[in-house]
Length: 60
Image (tube, rainbow, N blue to C red; front, side, top):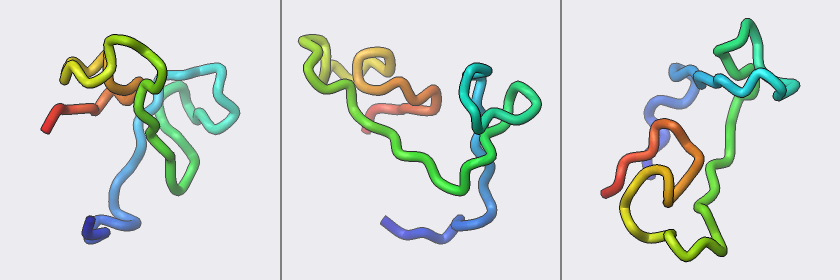
């Protein structure tokens, strides 16, 4: 995967309980790690809520 946007994107976050949340909608981390929903029987359906907790998820 190319990293052509490194340093130019921002990370939106609505998890207000996270220590890295700033102003209620912005993540202060430089990088995040998105994981699949392992161990659930509904994984691999292609539906965003079944695959990942990433709000930007889109099936390929």
